[in-house]
Length: 591
Image 1 (tube, helix red, strand yellow):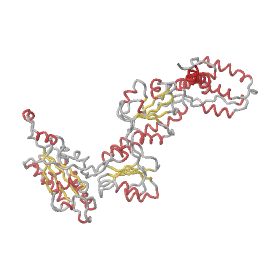
Image 2: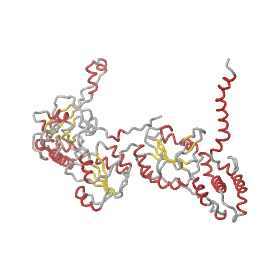
Image 3: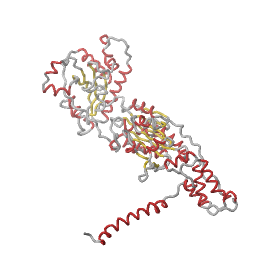
Image 4: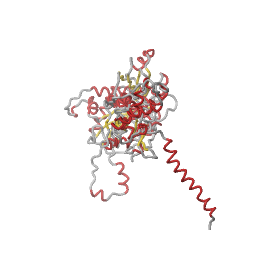
């Protein structure tokens, strides 16, 4: 049996901890926090406005009767601050709900400013009153009722939490309107006033000790729900400076994962934007007079069209005006330049532009006039056996004319020639109602082009060497396909035409479905592949001769009932891996 000494020793420490806990909760803890404004006035939290005024008047009765002799003390400032806050309905609401008082510094400064001074010299009121109106912008007004449905819309949401009683919110109103305009077309924007208590409380953080909602970064607060984030656990809170540039950059970079577009000098522009991305990309160069960051919609375009175009910013300086005019035909800023095919004049758009207009420009100019045949374009161009003609899925026969070669001056010259051929096809006038059998030979290609059964493209014989070898296999194919071996003089661009033809004779029946063997199973992946026949051009690289050859080949392909033949075509390469910025992953997911 344990002795009394052992028992006393065993329970001595727990008893001491219990006593210490009681002292902490009853004595130390209450005095470690500043008094509430209600305690300063001496009223309860549920007191009416009249009761607050009466309590304040009792406390200040002596001050008002002795203005010339009464000395301002810290207690006087605390009472005045508490009364002005609690007598304002909006500020009292924010204080009650979120323990929010953005004007604490005003009282702190007043204590130092009026210390030892006479009461008559105290300038009242201490707190400035704002008549805030933050509703004059294009962001959505969020409520507890529409929040879930709006958040369910596809895309990212940037939400402003504000109060009509907050001076900081009032001062931020113009900046928020600018942010909403900048993010138009890139992210959804909404705002929540603290009076929408249920939703504002949901978006606020919780005090771990009391469970009371609070706003860590004060008002206004910026909250982001990234794409696919539908729960409070995955939202992100902005903690930086409340200025337009910083908030927009945070949204574009950290939330949307958009790439930054740097400013370039002439030398770096040529190396990084024009040469490095390769000849398959259109070059988009934006000239700015201000030097400000690229607009979010421009950064979004740099991401969405990264497979088609490279982007760069240039700061416009008058001393370099003649240089930019000679290079790109640009004589002022702001301006956007699209550099396309070799020898083609740059396309220049002047003036400010919005998200929608820029998207339309990118769709119009995202590819060269003579587009490159690549993995991401082959089906769109109708040059893929797994796809169909651009004229539609019911088209039986269609054609793809390809000029292939190794990137260099000779391929650029061949592309210029093929672009002129395409211009001729575009400019030919074909009657709306015409019998193809009665067309002159010279108009057969133009008619096929108008019907979208004919596409003209170019192929990088180096990057797409397997594809190039497959169609141009011969003893001298190395002059066109594969890496450059010796000198550029040995490069020989070549033109060939592929006829695609759907096989409408393959009709599935119930009997065939019932008796499918293993070879039929292997062929399922190739169902719908088009037959391919290849014609190689052996003439001189002259536009009229090539045009005549195309017309004759199409006329023969449309009229000849050749055997149906198909083969497994090598896949086209994407030519580039995903850029580093596209690998940015957001840790937020659908909850």
